[in-house]
Image (cartoon, rainbow, N blue to C red; front, top):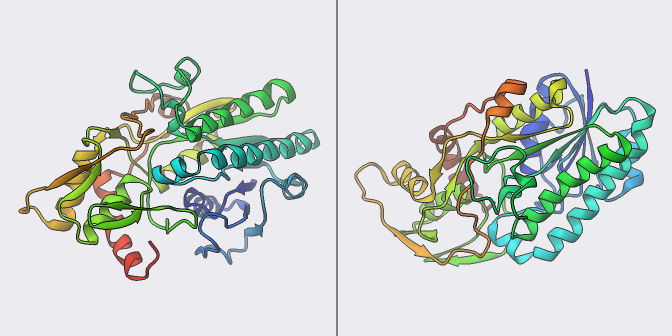
Amino acid sequence: MPKVLMTGSAGFIGGYLVEAMLAKGWDVVGIDNFSKYGPVQRSYDDHPNYHFVEGDARDTDLMVELLDGCDHLIAAAAMIGGISYFHAHAYDLMAINERIIASSCDAAIKVFPKGQLKKVTYLSSSMAYGSTDRWPSVEGDELTIPPPGSSYGFQKLAVEYWARAAWQQYKLPYTIVRPFNAVGVGETRALGDVAEESGNVKLALSHVVPDLIQKLLKGQDPLHILGDGSQVRCYTHGSDLAAGIIATMEHEAATNEDFNISTPTPTTVLELAEAVWRKIKGPDEPLRVAHDDPFEHDVQKRIPSVDKARDLIGFEAKVTLDEMLDELIPWIEDALEKDLL
């Protein structure tokens, strides 16, 4: 069974991915400095195949030590947050995340000649396509369109250049994964989130699905959305993201390739608001919305092509948006009662 080192293992995607790897019988080493949420507890903390190290992925010597004996490195650690977060921390996102990815690559390059490390899997983002004017976004478009307008999107695109450069110079194999709009349980209030006023509620604007659910559960009426609601997203459950990432690790065909990991179903923010409203308010209450000013870097449309993941590694996302809402609404309701959000 493979042994995997995952940076950022205490994060949202880490929660799903570590659990899925352990379920396959893999040995997993996780490293995280708890900078986003503070100390967190996971159901697999005491799993015999899981070894967690509280540490900083920018510590190259520590990364080299932890990579010893590993078959895979998943470079997932990053300073990341919702839309208000990456506007408020535009410089820090660039500076810190570049140091994290440099350390991860440096460590992998040092260990790779020993012969056991097979590949590095880099987590990028759909924001790499932030400046596109054609949809669906096909792998390779990121190399021909203008760079993303936000520092966060630009840095995520830079991750992909790190991956390709390490291959070009050191022949360090890679796979690039671009998640699209992750949805799932387990994401609590981030330590650095900035609370924003939105109508009659105040919350740290993060991702649109939990934001709309929180607003309605807090009694907001009309429901406030950013902009006119025509923004388009494709939502992907954390379990599907984990399955897609694992598929890229298991298939030789994924070596030195990049993949959009997502559902292909586009949904406008207004359509999402309607779906959340119906789940919480019931079918007979007409939707009432108010429109707040959008953020500067609120990308208007993100729709991926998923053909490459299907055709090359046999991966297709399975969880529907309706199923995501049925899971997430009661979880957020409970988290609000416990003051976790």
